[in-house]
Amino acid sequence: MSQWGDSDWKDRYDRWEANGQHALYCGAKRYLRLVKVLTTNQIAYQSQAARQPDASKKVRRADAEATWAKLLPKWKVIPNYQELVFGEDKPLGFWRLVMMDLYGAEMHLPKKR
Image (tube, rainbow, N blue to C red; front, side, top):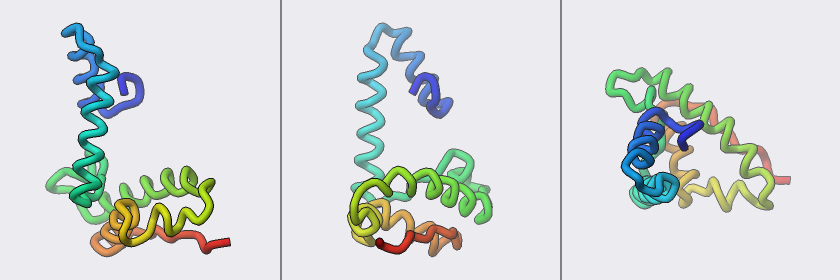
C-alpha cells in the first residue's frame, strides 16, 4: 500500500506511521472493510479517473477493460473459474455485467475447456 497504492492510501499509510500506529494493520483493516462494502452492496469498482463526476463513458469503458485485462489472467488457474468467479450471481460477475451494460465494455470470458 505504501509503495504501489493510490495516493490517498499512501497518504493515510504515512499518517498512521507518523502517529505511531501499526500502519500495515490499519491499512489492511480499512481495505478489507472497503472490499466488504463493495461486494455486499454490489458496487462496481472503478479507478479514481473513472469515478470523477465528469468522466465520460469512454473513460469508464477503458477503465473497466483495463481492470478486466488484469483480472482475467489471475483467475484462469482455477478450474471452472468462469462460473465460480464470474457467474452472474457473484460480485465480479455482476460487476462485469454492469460495465458491459452501462459502458459497452468488451469483457468476454474465454470458452470452457
